Length: 170
Image (cartoon, rainbow, N blue to C red; front, side):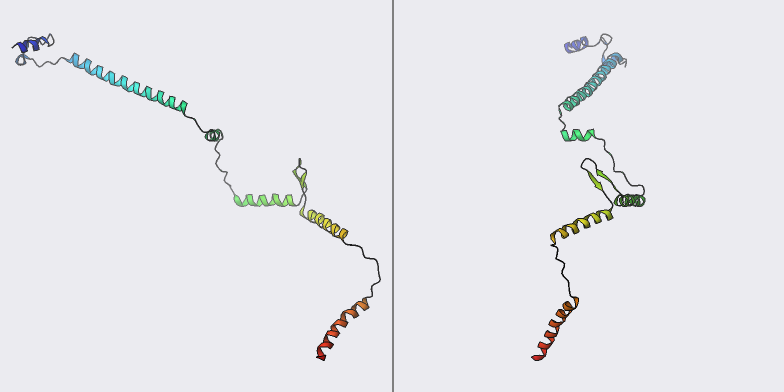
């Protein structure tokens, strides 16, 4: 019975004096509500703190991560996709016309280095003139001597006749 008295003293005031058989079925909602509210608030605060700490940690890690200079340089340049040709046949014809025009005209390739382009025919004439003048300089001039064409023809026919005559003797 002493245990029951101790138990009754620990009950809320509105419950004191009521035994299990005397209980009217009324549940005290205020303590349940405030307990539930306190647990929910604690969970919410823990959730918000967790998110805040994760964001802070990600920011800290990002500030400590060293990016390679190559990746940094690559990020600076805008990525450009390759330019596709709208009409390759027409562009090929246009390119060939430009090349033919350059082959048939005079113009600068690089004015600083003084390089020019000239028509192909003219370039071939210049190369031919340079080669023939170089060959002409290496050949020694022959003194003018009269050439007997008939004597030269007789000399050519004599060895041929000698060859035929020698073959018949054997």
